[in-house]
Length: 211
Picture 1 (tube, rainbow, N blue to C red):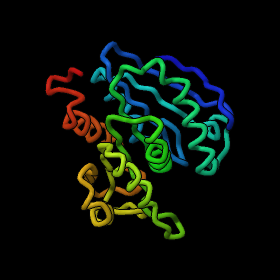
Picture 2: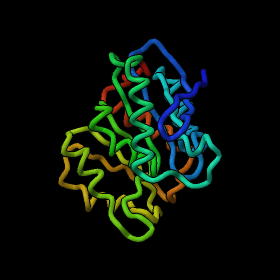
Picture 3: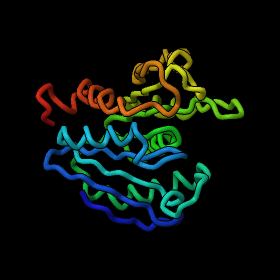
Picture 4: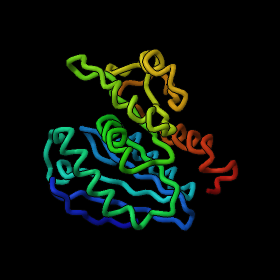
């Protein structure tokens, strides 16, 4: 594992990397609360590493600066795009998975036209804001780009249940909703297994764990 920083127009992003020789990499970023130490992300990172997938964890500048509130969406997208622009040459010939939780899931959806993922995995995608505004357009965007996308959602998620997501996106062939069971927006450390199963289902890990 190695840790480094990338300077962006919004401040320094912290990069935590676990490298393997197999040509699949997962870029993973966090939500507006905890960083990569959130239980669902922590378990996901460990299982990605165990399955031989290179991991690039991206902690956004607002978190690195010790701020308690995430930056506005445009600033998050700008920072993420600048980080990816710096990293992309190292991984140009890799299959690319992008994983984000909550706010981070929104960022990877909004920037997908730049990153061109082979697979997107959203953990606890916040379909509705606290004011009730829908973020449906962000998922519609990746559907139009025909990017295979998996959304893993708890039944008690106040920002959108699996049933709500299925109702909104049932007509999109490239969107899969996974019911994570009796969980809230915080999810749990059981997410790692669900993420790995989704990656395997999409042909990026075979049944023996090889990439």
